[in-house]
Image 1 (tube, rainbow, N blue to C red):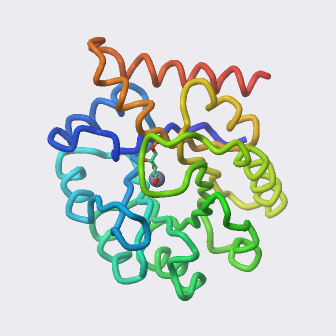
Image 2: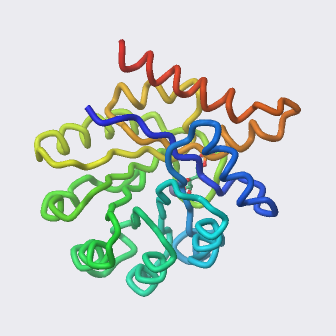
Length: 231
Ligand code: DX5
Ligand code: ZN
């Protein structure tokens, strides 16, 4: 079974102190940096681009950077994120005219590729391209904003995605994104997720008066994951 990886979404970080925030969550035990890219077109919000990714790397971040593209179209911006140091680049199939081509482009640029499934999007998109996918990301909220409530139907969808991945025999990560918190992360792991995005649950904890709050929340998530594994 794959290792569990915790991926703080920097959408909920203090953007004025972004480098420091990312360093702190990694020092507190996070594994990868989840980087939400929104274009006010595919989703109704606007965030950050390749220059910010490059700035994090120049700041000294060496952890994998997981670029979640919520933009349309996707192909134009893929080489820019690859040049900026992305590890994973994932996109929504509805946002690409040629899903197979976009996946291949990500790999040709030297990155790991992934498809993102909205709550209402069928896993059928995987059938003919699974050999070009390194990451399957299931949205457990509708994309666009941090701080939304986890949609419970995602648990059954995770089970189905886990079965598809296992049947393929391929090394593909299964990531869940949206409304993941200490009290439901274990359930998502039991349903088959191995990579856990959390924005408000992690960075929200940093706004409390406890100086070790990132350690506390990430430690609590790690404990829930360990309980889920031994279940
Ligand atoms: C939503 C983004 C998520 C979001 C997660 O469109 O893709 O990564 O920031 O935030 P929380 O964990 O607060 O739901
Ligand atoms: Zn995301």
